[in-house]
Length: 254
Ligand SMILES: [Zn+2]
Image (tube, rainbow, N blue to C red; front, side):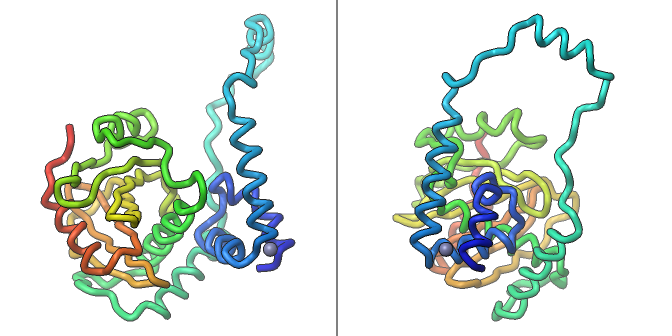
């Protein structure tokens, strides 16, 4: 990706509106380009400054009433779904992952293209989360504030577990997008490393876990308790496997 292409995509990248393949391409360019990184950081500062609540004034009630009276009763607008081009790009990225991954382990079911895309997007989400100010929307050393934070932001209640005693303290959480839907991302730490745990409701029955290695990152995907999970980190492979075991054995917070 060139500097010009990157600059065109920076705003969408900042707003998390790119698909997995585009996000990965922008991230790869930023890693090697000081000029684009400086521009990115400038945009990020401006975005933060514009989000200050004291910049906003409520509209007068009379204006609100006039506006409402002028509207035909339209249904609430939904966010547009991803178009076929974005899906094709994501599938291409997933295909690249398939070619470069040495092995799927524990493959009780044959991994389909959709599974690859989901794991590729989870790794992409992990990489995005390592960018400045992307890691957490709720920062907490108190685990009891993380679970309530998700309520009202998601149409499901994520499984949050306290693994501090096992050496994986919970650091916070945020919303992310995997497989075209909004998911919960819990952020755990292992020493100086970050573990992102993505989760969303899974209609199907539980299944075996699978593991993918990609560019120094490990992703482990599994289902259980009606949820689908993908854990992603750059910790040692065995370390992430232990995290998954501890999480599965842990007691959910109420
Ligand atoms: Zn550049």
